[in-house]
Length: 164
Image (cartoon, rainbow, N blue to C red; front, side, top):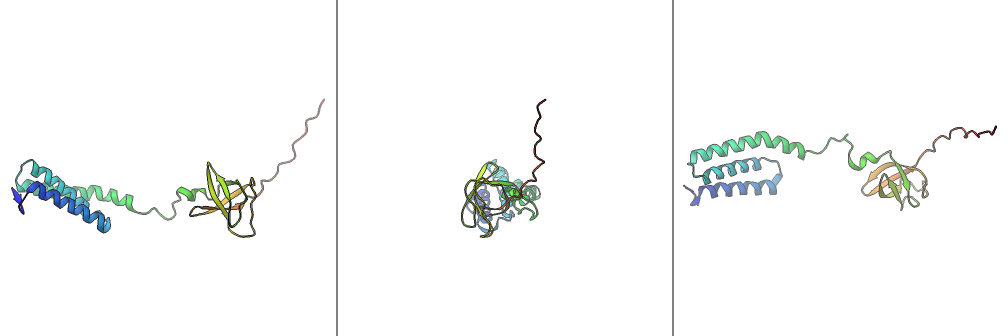
């Protein structure tokens, strides 16, 4: 059987490819792609030599099933994360940093965890020397912004052992 002068399987395949192109070039809303999957299912049925009715059934069922099952999964992955969810570099805020060189408002590097970051301070008055303890207060782009850590309270002086 032929559709528009083409073999029916080829017509379904071209319809599916056209819908995928529309999906990619226009919006990524994942409406055209499930219908394209239905067209591909109809192309398989058509290639098997079935009549137009089974092709239409495969197209409708394939489209509906992919809309009902795949679209919610894809939408979940395309949605931006919740604003209060901390991930990636934002998890570093509050962590300890060790400056590898002097850190000021214009320059510096620091080791944070196992990584070396370009580091800055948030004001000209704050300067952190290499080796001093610091804390990450913000991450903006490729820069980790640091502040000096509060010194840990010194415990009582260690007791000297007396010889008997």
